[in-house]
Image (cartoon, rainbow, N blue to C red; front, side, top):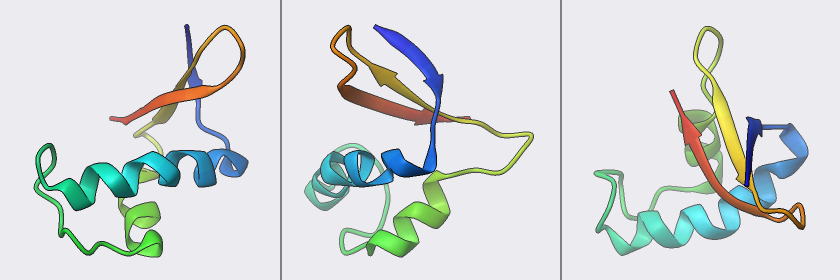
Length: 67
């Protein structure tokens, strides 16, 4: 597994699993009906913050974090 900086073209992959996690309402205290633009604006933090992704050995995106 590799953890590296997020790139803009990875947003569709992040959103593909993030919206399911948010809608389930079991992990994060976000609005359950959060829209994609709202999620993107909230998740992709600006410097000095960072948004990263985790990719497996095949290069598939398997996670994300922001700090």
